[in-house]
Length: 257
Image (cartoon, rainbow, N blue to C red; front, top):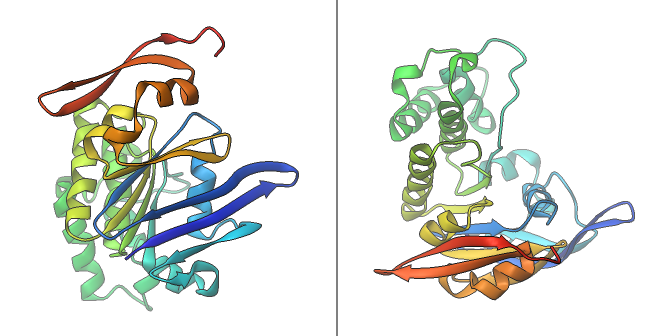
């Protein structure tokens, strides 16, 4: 399942947010979208989701223009994991994950719906909190529930908006390990993140954005060089490579940043 974004531009009125964006994500790939706040990362995800319609360009999933698909067809193709979920009434973990099955549901949940929920909980190792209320969960547990809800939908494409935000180091690695395992099973994952080191460790490709445009696009160890990081973030860094593991050490802000 290939996601292609070609020459996409989007504006809120006169404010240009995306400028001629071209990128793609293939089956089995994790693509990390990087860039400072306001670079256009979340807006790009909303365009791929079909929530925002670009004024220019084309977005396709497996060759199908997303704006030629009805909402249920598109929802079956793409799952979205937001940064947070608003809870307006009491709801359990199991019920929350079952919401992910909405594109498949009829009058009542079928056996296949229940099994999809159980499988996603098993993969995320959250079966023990199935009947807890969302309000009782830690930030890390909530993030796993959001990911499980996306997995329960059984879509071939996952969009994840900063899935490690507000998580401790152990939970960050667990979430990224899970996403990587999902792509190894043939799904496509497009992930926005601020963490360059997580992108270096997990991404098959990175797309670096700034000012609404793509600054660099390619393999993380080729793209995330000191000059690129400095030009995009205004931060001096050291990019080290030890035993095949590449990582970024921030040194300080540039004087003109």
